[in-house]
Image (cartoon, rainbow, N blue to C red; front, side, top):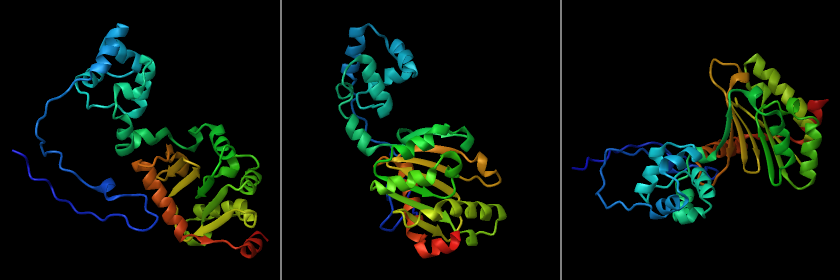
Length: 282
């Protein structure tokens, strides 16, 4: 007997800049049972393995997954691996991925999760490969958005010149800084002032610089479809805050979350005018 679905209510994100949808925060009752239907096995995968003389266990070893996982793929044609694993499997078998899993592209559009977006994760900024920051900015083709104090000027030589050159090439460059006057923490205030010293001189060079009248606990670097995110942890020094590298996918739950945050902060931040910049620098 099917159980009664659990009704839940929660606030849904609103606003023209929200990348989130109600489905991102909707809760589901996993106890509800669905009518049983006949399960069709994946004959194409089974026959391909047989033609190559590979057992499910042999193939699982090459792919780096559990043998039972491969057996489940074979036993149920409706079971599709994560796209990254599916494409790797297809390359190993020298066939097109859609031959093994015809619905792979529909799955990628509608069921992307955090594992598809996540490129890397590091336990603190010091663990991030040093050349990553400069490479991302140098390779930028459409946009560069810096939100918060990521201390990029310490990581990238000649950062102001690099950003100015990108702006002159027609690339959208935006910087959002925490307002030093909006924080009561001494360390945060000093960092905000240092960030202003690095970025305020760029106003008037085709670069948008704004001040956010509040605390920025999350720092984001967006370069085209790459997101580098650092979220502070209460009670721990900022240097130990984890850093994650995401690819901004159209249906990715994590990237939508951080893009919504970025757009919300952008809409609230106050642009710095060239005259105000000159007075601040002076």
